[in-house]
Each structure stands twice: as C-alpha cells, then as structure tokens.
Length: 415
Image 1 (cartoon, one colour):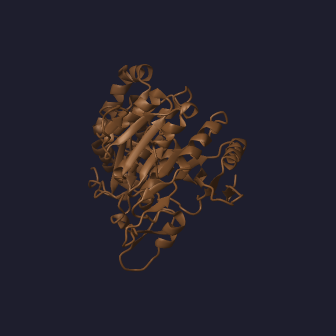
Image 2: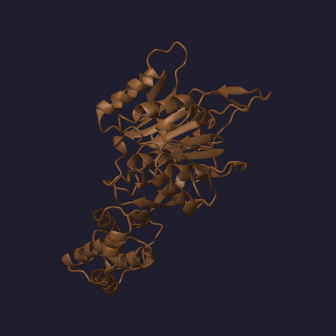
C-alpha cells in the first residue's frame, strides 16, 4: 500500500524536484529521495518521483534518466522494497532503445532548469517572485573539455546570479553590462530585476548564439545589434565583443553603471585585454539626476534590524539576514551627481600565479580591487545543489582608483 501523497511544496520534496531538473549528480537525487521517505525510498516517494519528475521528461537527456532509474531501482531492491511497475517499464524502454546513443552522438547540448528558491521570509525582496521560485531554463553544453566551455554552467555564474538576486538594491535603476556572459544566466537574473538596461557580451560566436537562445527561452525581449533601429530599453541586448579587438569608442558607447563578470580570470594571455576593457569601462563618469545608495558600505549600513518593516529570516548556513525595501535618496532640488561605474567579478582562484598576474595588471591600470567575499555574502537560493561549492568562490569589487591612492588591492583572498 502506497503511503499518502507527498507535499510538493515541502522543502525535501522541492529540493528533490529542483535537483532533478538541474540534473544534479544521481547520488544527490537518491539522498533527497531518502529524506522524503524518512530514510527509505517508499512506494509513496517513488510515486512522487514518477508524478513530478519522470512523467515530465519530454526533451530531457536520456542517459541521465536511464542512470537515475537504474540507481533508483537498485536502491529500492537492495532494501527489499517494492518497485513501481512504471519505473521498470520506463527503464526497460531506455535499455532497449537506441535513443541514448543518438543523443550522445548527435547532440552536444542539453537543457537544465535552475530553480532559485526563496525562503518564506523574503517575499518582500524585489527579486522574489510570488511563487517564491525563479526557474531558469538553460541550454548548455556537454563538451566542457572540448572547447565549448562558454556554453557550460560554471559555479561562479551561479554565485554571481545569487548575488544579483540577493542584493537587488545594487542593481535597481542601473545599466548593467556583463563581460563574457556564457550561457546568459546572470543576464536572465538581471532581466528579472527589471534593471534600466542589460547588455550581455561574449567573444565567441557559438557561445553568443547559445546565450541568445537561452534568453529567448526565458525572456522573449532580446535584441541584437541592428544599426538604424532605436533600442528598446526594456530589452536585453547581446553583442559580440572579443576583448582583444574591442575598440575604445565601442566600449565608451556602452556607458554602464555596473560591470559584471563570472570566471573571467582564467587565461594569462587574455588578462591584459580584459583589464584594458575594464579600465575603459570603469574610467567613465556618468551623470545621474538622482543619487542611488549603491555603495557596498552603505548597503551594509542600511541593512539593520529595526523590528518594524523588515522581516528576518535564517538561511541554510544559520546566519541571520534581512530582506528590506530599497530606499533611494533624491535631493529636493534634484541636483545632478556624478557616479563612476563599478565592477563585480566572481571567480574561483585555481592558479595563484594567474590571479597575481591579474592583480598586477589591475594595479598598473590604476584600478582598485576589494575582496567582498566575507562582506557581501549572497543568500543561498540553491540549497539543493550539492555540486555547487560556493565557499571556493571570491567576489571582487573593482573600481576607478581615486587620485592619491597608491595601494590598489585590499583584503587579499586567502588561498
């Protein structure tokens, strides 16, 4: 007798479905399934998996499904449980068909759904949808070792996306530009916040085409370079921008308030071109009729517990955080102020020599770097992702160096 149906909104069930849609490692799915069944994969858990995962697999990657079914059935049988007939039948279909071989040989791309899960205490956060889940559909590559890395989902892009959704105050009413946008995940999160303008870029044409495809999957309003056509400020714009050939006039025409980048510090050969791009983008002063409180110091000071209009919540790491509404301070006389752009770069420091090379180039370019990894920690909106190690990722803030400042780096990351 199958147990009473499980609640899809329960955290353990929600994590299981989210992990399946994101194609997390099979062992992680089995672990979540055990949690749903209080230690064992019962018939009720199997029915839940069938109803909410396996019966909705149109277009999913066949080998992944086959491996999951095999592991699931084996786990139940080893514990002397009863396996649902539907699971046996579906597994037999994958064993007897050639579908898997066709998928492996003919397609290098798969589709994943990345679910950003907002705790109940964050309904007041501007980035939190009514459903408390922002689901992003991404076409990505299987060929991480064959030169198609721009179409893969990297940990730093997950981290930077969580950062964008955690601190919408930083991006409200701002023009945002991303260097090396990859699959477009960060751009999709920026579009969700309805920032004033979002421009994504990549130097690889295949990556750019895949990025545009992903943006169209999630937000139909995607614009490419079309001379003579007025830009729609509500659209996300995608441009082809190789760092080594980007002209100064082209970069100056972008005029961003915020520059973003995920895992762009990886190749010493590319670093001089990247730093040149950052220097041109950040050494521009942009007038504003209203001064936004967008400094990270101000953001931390603003996030105080006053016990009135703020809601406290506890994230998975156990630290208390707060969701607040953004306050924009405008002078009564509406006097224009000048603001220099800033850049937020998320990266994994895999090679200290490469990172030191980047630091030296940034210092020569008269830019400042501040390590905010321990200061602005994004909320954990991906609690089901066991494959995602956010502790290894650094968050760097890069800005134009004020006159008279000598030291260009503060708070050196510990390796």
